[in-house]
Amino acid sequence: MALLLDHQFRQLPADKQVETRPFLEAVSYLPPFFDLLGSTVFAPIKADIAGNITKIKAVYNTNPGRFKTLQNILEAEKEMHGSDWPRVGATLSLMWLKRGLRFIQVLLQSLVDGEKDENNPNLIRVNVTKAYDVALKKYHGWFVQKLFKAALYAAPYKADFLRALSKGREVKDEDCLEKVRQFLVNYTATVDAIYSMYTRLNAELDYTV
Image (tube, rainbow, N blue to C red; front, side):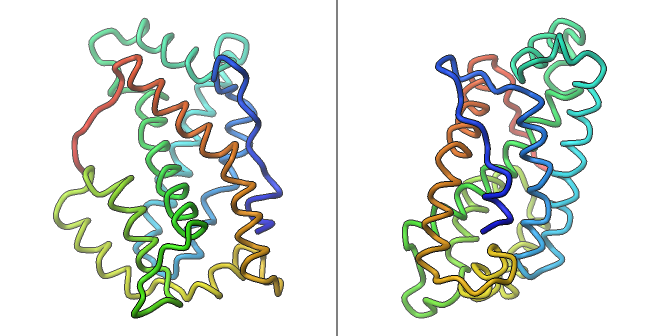
């Protein structure tokens, strides 16, 4: 669980604004999460997340004072790009990044909630499927969805996945899951805040890839 707990997300202020720099620092440690899922099919999602982080960081670095929060970036890009917005810049990159973050959130929450396939309780296939269905499926075309279904058969055993989260240390499942619960508090609040921001600013796009 050190993979996640070593890089906790900050507690949000009362106005739910997500400060850009700490957010980028925290999410930069998340791409290796997809290596734990046991299939190269997740490599494009990992690469997509890493690439979007890099693009957002590049925009932030052009003017850290102006882009102190993620909302600052979206509002500035809306003004700069006019009718091309939100299909451009860091706004588009963050739109896709938040979906990858939601995938991680739903997967971990499903594990914490004890959801499982009664016929195969030692697998995390049910949890990964729920995460995909909630966060990514509607944005993927038929071919990508087929690839994902194939990837499910490579999903690791629950014990192996939790051990990997703990960087290979022998930790009781319940102890690991308790640390996941702790991680999810600020992480979920951050992801929810970004989704709310996209709804509020009418920046969400529903096209498929």
